[in-house]
Image (cartoon, rainbow, N blue to C red):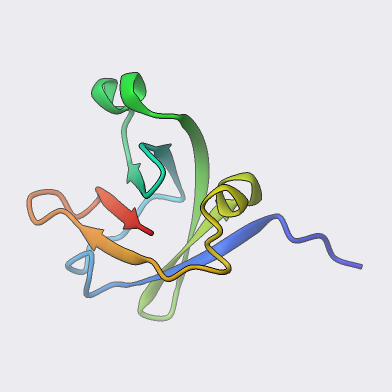
Length: 99
């Protein structure tokens, strides 16, 4: 039996304006409804975040697959909830997930 090690969130490359994302990113659980993914550590987010985790990013055909750790998935109930993925216009490597 294969153990599920993460929840998959797919982000179209058009959303990140064609930018390639790195293989790992930092996820900050900001509050009960928002997470933010960044490439580099962010001091402000680290001070405000409930928790922080490293996530893997896998490039697939015309999309990025972000593998969210199960503890984050369970906390936000991503497998049961609707969520919106947003990307910063100024920096497409900053991704926000709103539940």
